[in-house]
Every structure is written in structure tokens, then in C-alpha cells.
Image (cartoon, rainbow, N blue to C red; front, side):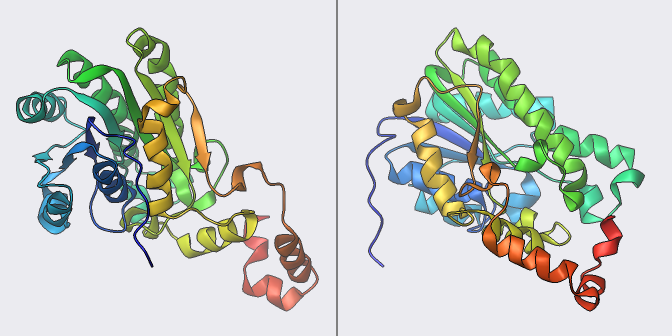
Length: 290
């Protein structure tokens, strides 16, 4: 397959991507595509992710991009990261938040029995950290006028997805933070948005119980099918570029049309078969959610 075309959309721009881990992660693909579109890139993650992930490889692919150690749930870490970023690169034109985790999901704790200490950790790491990144970027004068800030979300912020548990609450908070910052950032023509991506086979996504079912369901319900991590990165390039300088405070669905569908013919046929086949209904546990 020939290499995909690049358009210089981010030529002359600088940015930082928080949260890339390995080739499967959306943050990884965003960083790689931003570099290929002409941007100078910095990468950031927690120390354990840097130790066990492939960030050094990504750094080399992105022109030896600096790697900054940062726990985005710690004020001091975020403050120091933006100070270090300014020393190494100067102020940036875009910030990407690709961070999320839930110990409750990892331990398969039912939503009605959440461990509240873990719940608060989910909200802090997956939601409040977005506020922290924006706030400390502003305090350190680390983002330029006309910049773009993006965080990755999921439709479970607005609809119930049983096994997505407390991450749905965190994504709701994430999207609200983007709206709340919008008018405040607009004074400097900085826009802030979230991208609601299809189910994607990343390290984090694959850890959700029944993820493969969510993925297959999304594939059947989306007219264009699920969007891949690479396709999400391609879309993100337009949101980071000057082509979308009047787009702000939006939750932008990138899901093959899933969010606008009621039902598809394949799903209707499948539901009909299950509802009229007791053995099949029992096998898939249809009564469990009644």
C-alpha cells in the first residue's frame, strides 16, 4: 500500500501530545500524523508508561521528539512539564489530551458497587486532568494565541453503555470542561474541542469487559463502519490546523455515523432472530438486562 499523502497542515506549528503509549493508541497516531503534517512534537506520559511503552520509538519517528514525564493528576507535575516544554520548545500551538483509566473497570466492579476512592481517581485522571493541562498551559504562557486544544471522548458520555461504567461519567466531565473553557480561551482565539471516537482497539479500550461486543456492535450500527485510531488521527489534524479556527466548544463525533443512527438492517435482523429463538436468547443472556 502506498504511503498516504500529507498536506503540510501543521507546517511551522508546535504541539504536545499527552498519553501516547504504543502503536495501538490514538495518541501515538496523532503525534505521528502531526509530525508528518509538519509539526514539531513533544510527547508526555507517566513514568511507568514511558518505561513499559514504546515512547522512545515514537520519539525517533517524530524527529527525536522530547519525552516529558508527567502525571497529569498532579498539579506540580503538570506545572513542571509546561515549564520544561517552554525551555525545550517554547510555547506551543496545540495540546492533545489522550488520557484515561478506571481501576473500577479494570477490576470489573459493578457500577452500583463502585469503589469511591477509585471512582475519584477515574474522574481525576480521565476528566479533571484536562482542566489541569489547560490551566497550567495558560499559567505558564505555554500556548500561543490561535491555538487548538483537543481531548478524546466517547459516546458513553451521553448515553449509557453498561460496561463503560464510571468512565462514562469521566467523559461527561471532560466534555463539560471543554465547554466551560471555550469562552475564556476565545479571548485569545484559542479553541477547545473533544472528539468522540468509535470503539478502538487500544490497550485501554481492550480492557473494558465485553469490548469486542461493543466493537462489533458499533461496526454493524455505523454506516461507514468503526473509525480506526489512524483515521481518528487524520481527522484530528484538521481540528489542530488553521482550517478549523472557528470550531470550538464542540463534541465532534468521529464514529462512521454511529451517533446519528437509530438502527441498521443487519441489527434489526439480528434482534429479530434473537427475540424469536429462545435458545439463542438464553445463550446471549438476553434476560440479564431486562
